[in-house]
Image 1: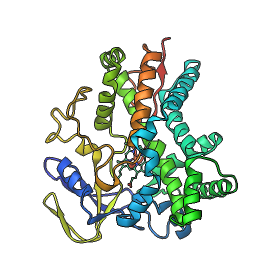
Image 2 (image 1 turned 45 degrees about the horizontal axis):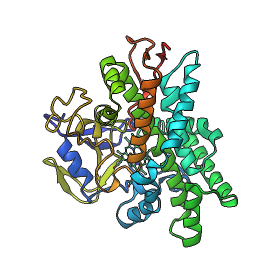
Image 3 (image 1 turned 60 degrees about the vertical axis):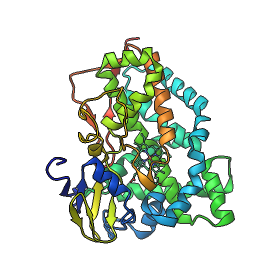
Length: 375
Ligand code: HEM
């Protein structure tokens, strides 16, 4: 497609048509083009599928708006996610990782996804937001079902409704008993200065829970699978920890955890990559394809932990560039360093078995990765 039809008309499993953009330059141009809006309304999940009040409570967040609304919503939380603030979380994340690896060490059937890739990002984002640890498993069930259903005929209305009710209850609970965590800070921004509508508050929560951990799970999982497939790479990184950040950038490029940017809609007729897009048409920008574009990356289909420069777009580009990139990177640096140190002889339980990928369009990651620790 990159070679012959860089803008390709496709249909989502639920029948919605859209333009798939596959070349790096077009993807970048598309993400930087204000005429491609994030306000897609009810185009992907039809009006009659999800009750309006549930839709509003989960879909009024920064990734669904543009312009001044976007700036206002992003600014409310952006100070929490700067590289400097995030670096302060290092000791906490190191401790969480080491505790998880302790538990993994005594598992009868250790699994790198279940024992590390899932719980670590979930614990971190819950701690930041001030969400009870006991709710982790419910999040996993809800957000897995939600993400698998986007763009399909089986959009899980019940699951999403339950999730929204949970978030509303949580907000009420924090209103009654505030703490010093992010969710309480967002509530006081709403209540004191009226900078945040109630729907925006619950939607922000929904976005941060999902964007904050489902993505990083896949970075940790995909990276672990790449390490297990290449013992020389693992050995090299163990000997030189300074090389881990470079390898993480290549994990992000080569097996991009978020394969596509969120859907965009053309607010007017425009041209992208030589193709006319009519007003109202939808566009899906493939970050995974952009990151494998041979026009930009030499030997683009080959994993190269020392690739430099590595201008991948795994965190997007432009106004909606990932807010959590410093957090995702920090978690990955810590997790891979500890994993390599702690289980130097770890290997896949069955190296000949096919990797099991998650269903759905929204995330690229593994459902399981059974391992032998060989301690
Ligand atoms: C490896 C991990 C991650 C990847 C690959 C990733 C990827 C992305 C991408 C591609 C976008 C842009 C989507 C678009 O333009 O449509 C994005 C936006 C966003 N990400 Fe991440 N993300 C990761 C981790 C995180 C974490 C840990 C957080 C924590 C809070 C987070 C929060 C957000 C938010 C809030 C946005 C929306 C920003 C905006 O609309 O201005 N992400 N992410």
